Amino acid sequence: MDYNNKIFKLISSSGNSDLSSNTIFLYKQKDDLLISEYMSENVKFGQIIGVVSRNGEINMSYQQVGQDGKLKTGVCNSKPEILSNGKIRLYEKWTWTSGDKTQGQSVLEEV
Image 1 (spheres, rainbow, N blue to C red):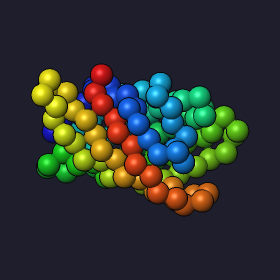
Image 2: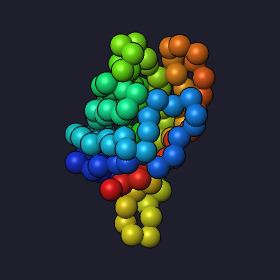
Image 3: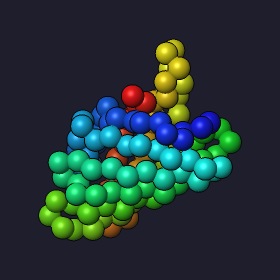
Image 4: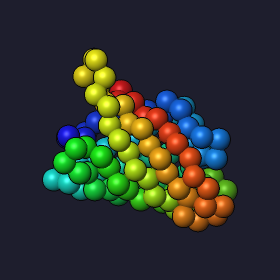
């Protein structure tokens, strides 16, 4: 699976997420290394670093600074689905590793 230069938009997320429907991720990939940056109404700046497996799953960690100036971190596993139009949908399960350490789920879709 090649995620390089693919743009993803948040479709849905758990209530404990800091992201919103206008959150956009531009994925960059070299070999099995994946990186991305993102922002939203609640996130001043966020970064992702991950490893892509042979089946396209992404194991990643993320860090972000909120509009409130607080640093938050977490880990996430993303599983891809190829849609009938050839675009990729990602089903994510994530856990905050800072703050309340709660878990959540999100769905991203390639734009």
